[in-house]
Image 1 (spheres, rainbow, N blue to C red):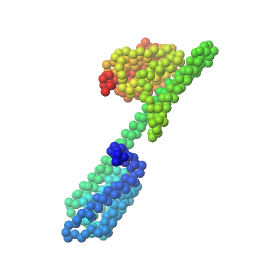
Image 2 (tube, one colour):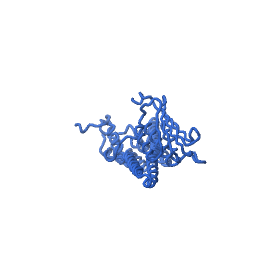
Image 3 (tube, rainbow, N blue to C red):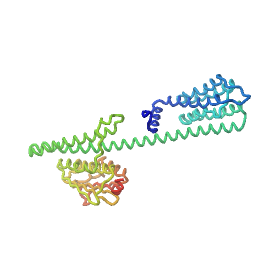
Image 4 (cartoon, rainbow, N blue to C red):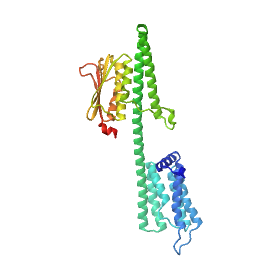
Length: 389
């Protein structure tokens, strides 16, 4: 019996996946439910004086339900088939009536939810004729006519609401996919740009070091190897997260780099010949993992820009913990931004996007003394007790 137990949400998700993969299964299920509802008047005792329900009448009622299996593929054709079958049932069979026009309501809902405006207009015109005619053939009462118009209008409204909700869900999914693509692009840019920049610097310095200081050449090649391995590890981590349906052991699932990995990052940059200083001030405390990963990437991109564009000899990384925020500054002594350019490539846009994602801000430009280049980012962070919770 234990094997039959399970999370109801899991069963619901599996059902949704099945319906998405094969809508015909859903349509058959709906047809069976409608058939079950229409069977009830045939199995309950009929009032005295009324003829008994016959198998022929039941067969005709089934004929009105059968077209629902194709309601998505040919909704207008199904509508006319249902109307024809209902007319045949009313004229040729003295069967029990139904409390609701189930088949017609399902078809109207389907057309309202899935069909373009032209088909919806045709449906409305057909119903304006078919409903009064059906009432006239049945009871000829204004009460039934009013009730029928209300329920068919409700089915149409529910269908339009379903269409609106599905459109909103699609837009939301597309926006989420666009945000994810932008995030992945930033991660790939930061990882590859940083690694390649350091490797180029080390590779260019290697031949000179071989002639002048062989021991430094060995360190340069070690730095190239270390940088390449680190880049591959981070890329495998990212690709492992992107893979869906693979075994958990197919790729590493380490957390994103954070503040604890900053010293190793700075060491790799130092190995390229850049003098890097690092300091913290204020009430140093843990920060959320997402913020820590963002700070790491911001520092990484800032150092990459320094290595690639600044022509600097020194760079300072300073983290200042305020009461409600974290201030990150990366300042170098290079030549600063080139005339006519406000920054150093697309990486600065990624820095601003990362800061904005956490409600922070980023300012870039010349250093405080008018020389070099500075990246300053301020990100709100909660108190230590709130992070712990």
